Image (cartoon, rainbow, N blue to C red; front, top):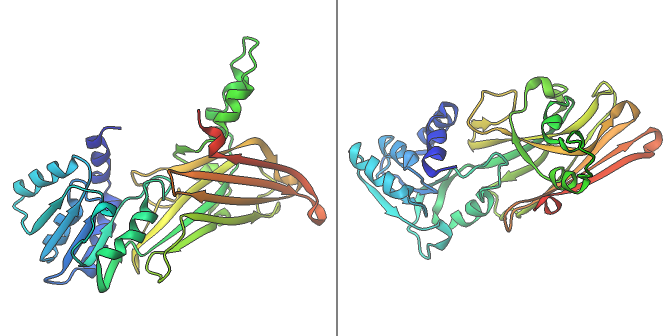
Length: 310
């Protein structure tokens, strides 16, 4: 995706823009200073200045910073300092009253949000405000075969070819997809598997893990083909944004994790262990188990993004 296409999607997302404006409006005080990390085209700093911030530092390593300068000039927005560098490369940043970073991906942490915000505390004055303040990650079973059928083409290629090795790589991957409400058992099937408080004293770990269980009766004995992931970010208390299929649509989509084989929950309860590691890129591991009466193991699958690399 080209740089301008990325920013076209961001700035064309009214749900996102309105949530960020509402959050900044709550925390910007006259005379406040702002550090805009991953500033892109400068949109958040432009909002902050019009809401009364005295000065904004824009940190952006890409060439989008030149566009931000031009947009600021054309809109008569002053009080900006442009820093072309990744925020983690800035040795002695000036302290700000408000630090904001919108570096979220379809999988929330794929663009380094966690590591960026952990480092961003260096930019914050004592008693200052960090945006976002919290993140929650959700998972739900996908009971429609629609997405799985799009991905698992290998058995249908035919021509007397054994494509099992290619299939194994494909099914150890995550996919950005639009998950529909009809693909899921219902909103009550969503499980919170991870929660991060970015304002906590201890810095959050880049290694995250969580578990979830769905009883057979809760799923109506449906067959599960994969897992859907989405997130909810809290910019400030009371102002949140969600990529749930049940929430207003944004430019972000959901993440689909396929299974190796479908699991018929009429035979038992579904258990999931999910972990992510974003220290170097993104690594996801998802392990699913089907347990029958008395906890008897009926089926088990383990998938790992490391196995999905070609």
